[in-house]
Amino acid sequence: MFDKILLPTDGSEFSEQEVRRAIKALSDDGEIIILSVATKLEVATAFQSRKAIANMNEKFLNEARENVEHMASRFDEHVNVRKMVEEGIPSETIVRVAEEEDVDLIIISASGKSGLHRFFIGSVAEKVLKNSERDVLLVHN
Image 1 (cartoon, rainbow, N blue to C red):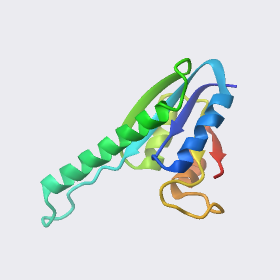
Image 2: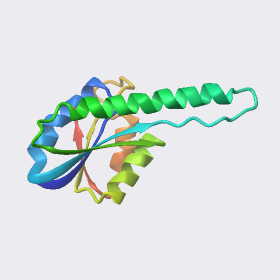
Image 3: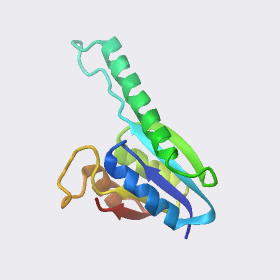
Image 4: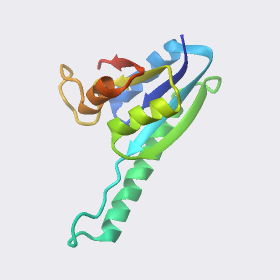
């Protein structure tokens, strides 16, 4: 059993399968941190509109908030769930948050929104698996 589990979500149908695994792995008084990472775009050229970039970033943040709320709603109220939304590069942010929060386990889906075949590990999951010093449970879909 694990006391603190990080559960990253991108809102894909596959990430929902992680909920069952998290409940089974969590100790009775443990905590689940649900994390969604919103990509943050930067203005790279003079031809890009700052307002359009800001609107896209706000859209990404809202989507990340919705992803976290949706996954949190899948847990019973007796489960200790904390919700987090961060901006950044998903794999790097997941690894950083896992370290900062001192989690015991990261549970991540093998495939995310990219729709890769089930025989391939998604790029975010693969990078987390390779770069994290924390235990990682890779959920196959």
